[in-house]
Image 1 (cartoon, rainbow, N blue to C red):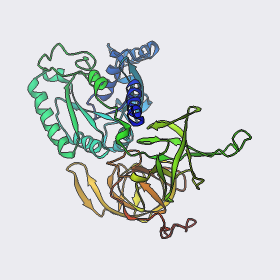
Image 2 (image 1 turned 180 degrees about the horizontal axis):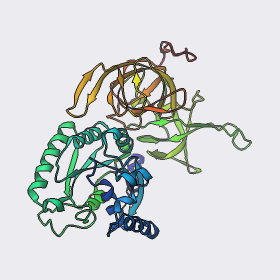
Image 3 (image 1 turned 90 degrees about the vertical axis):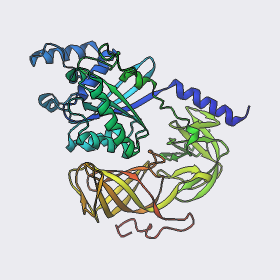
Image 4 (image 1 turned 135 degrees about the vertical axis):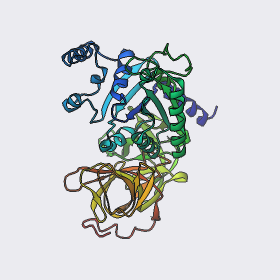
Length: 453
């Protein structure tokens, strides 16, 4: 058996043994997101006794006979008082079949940025719809955000079916409308499930009142949706986080480059390029968990040793020579502005991409996306909080970016306020242009003290 085939077999076995699903919930105000999450945690036996006791006590104080399961996720005092979700609430739970990281995101339009935060690393998004109201503006907004963030799986949970007498026709109409809309945005997979989070129908256990529905419950779908991909399918990307040089008597010449593999597979003997310098070498060794290995894959944290003594530092990207990303100083991207202060043309920022942070200037804001009808508002001049738009950024030093559609890890970046370190904008790289060649110093890259580049 060849080394390549053995490695691929090992990858598959390991991935299946550590199955983890990251998913986010979204929906309009009062659609019942927090109740759904609370029901999911409660019915899957993922709530500690003291937590449940605290919820029951708080519910009695509010005059409710049954425990309000929404209180399991609405942790902020303002959330409990107003009965809404404001911040992203992360919950960790597990079943015998899979581990989960859940991001419960707000439904208000002014908290769209919070959904972007929660869904940015999600492999699945649960979009709730009130069966009485159907698909509304905020539903379309959440579907658009999920499509922009390239979330591969979307679940439409049609909630409060008990308030429409569990009518199949109501569910079918909503599912058809949403599927058509989300499909037009490019969402690859949509699963519609009729539920009642309050009563527990089709959340963890099948509903006895909706015998016309033969699909999975929410939990069953979460446990079985395929999310483990073969890392061999993606080109390898290794952002260098730290250079290890112990310089001890035992290891006088050791030089290793530590970090987490962002995508793909690296093997001893692979020809690689260090970006942005463009210098080439070969992987001489891979150290993982204190021992040498022949192969490593995403998302393992390892130390690479190269055959040549190159100038490699934090922020550099090591990639296969045959599949290296483009290097550029001009970044065109779709962004979601998350800060309260607007993003303006000419603004000086820091751009953080993987482990590399460089100075940058916002050169253009060509358009702002109107999520209501997906139209483009040209040349808005600025992006306010929660706005999604297109920008062009010029960086002081070259970056090795992938398109976000090809790699969510190495195609994403943050814009940061250089004055106080506040995160301003979350970006998803689009088509890069004005590429820099490996043997040509990008114009203005040496002027790192000022901002004229």
